Image 1 (cartoon, rainbow, N blue to C red):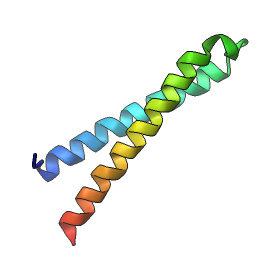
Image 2 (image 1 turned 135 degrees about the vertical axis):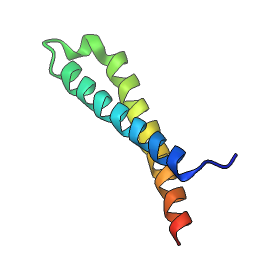
Image 3 (image 1 turned 45 degrees about the vertical axis):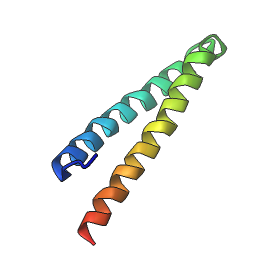
Length: 68
């Protein structure tokens, strides 16, 4: 499927926003009195951060290829 530059930029913006929120969630959960209670939520959030970071990198690569 071919996406327009505008679609890619909006997707990147939305993912960046979600990444920021997930990072704050991890900080909050790790800062709790008993972070071990939240181990599964922390693990899930970190895995999502990795997946979204990969998606942003791929979107960025696609955008860079269009300008070369």
